[in-house]
Image (cartoon, rainbow, N blue to C red; front, side):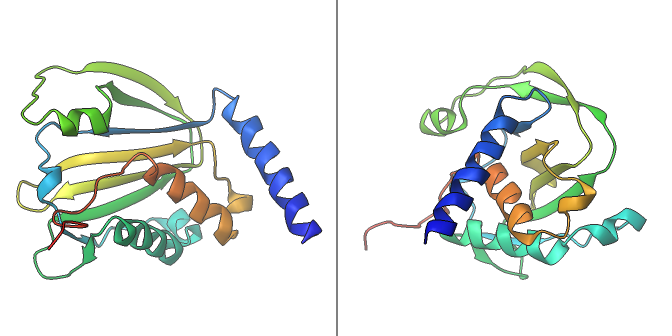
Length: 185
């Protein structure tokens, strides 16, 4: 037990040191056209993989996403799912445009709120960036994207716990319950 407490403290200190770094970014953006209160089901998109993608523990990422979405009431379905999920790991630094938007949960509560223009935020994302996209199957539009930068490197790719934690950090930004989940009968 003492060992676990020490490990938790060491990992917490390591993560806190990352939070102070400008290289560490965990963020998300959403589309105002997303019908988030109607989504119930999801599935994964079959994606083209590149040589370095063989390093990604794809199954760990998919299982972690599935587990997080099931906690929110979503069901995995290969029959006309509401959301299609794609993810990608980037191994080099790159420029990325995010959006300065109202808080996601606040926006969801203000039903009917529409903003036609977004303020751009330019990021320089570092190697080891994981981006996860949620795509509305009917409209074929990305309705939410979450990303972290600078968390994963080649040395941590084999550490399943670290990868699961990275995916969870991204999904901490997506707290939308599936339609009908937790409603009283």
